[in-house]
Image (cartoon, rainbow, N blue to C red; front, side, top):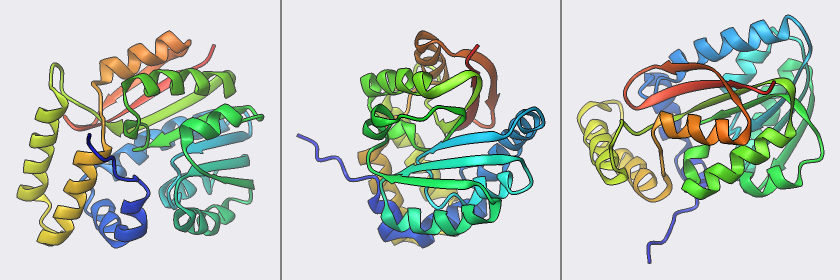
Length: 234
């Protein structure tokens, strides 16, 4: 039986590595942020944002996007207390009412008693396996208000690609092109990827979300491995 690594460990043990990945834009954080900012800005021009951030990490990128917008409240979910500590500092700049919950996103969403007009999740839901993704998206639908926006950023498999083939391709790419990381740092990222990540094709994400009740607004194909999907609840 395969032992699944706790996804929070990559944050606790390897924060500097993750910062290198973001700064180098290997996973297209910068490009994805530009697209999500466009939707957030447009939505905030009509109403104050009440945001649920699933897998918030340190919330550094999202806090920068929200800092100039009308944000009434922000709730962040994450497994890591260390991440949440940093997220509190970063999100304080927005002036929004802040709530943070530490735990598994699939459990926290079921306990949620508040509704939101924006759900945002960046590189988190791929940690759930297939059936858990389907259930999780249904739970997201329940806490999103009518007319609300769901921004989903994540890794993705190519059409017809198996998880094993995806892993092989991604690992090859890391070893070949992630030149800012040391050999040991690459090994740490690969270990996390091969034990914690369960990506699906974009078409499957869309299928799961539409089955839950969401309406597809946009599918942004940044590159073959990373993408952004915008859903609405009407």
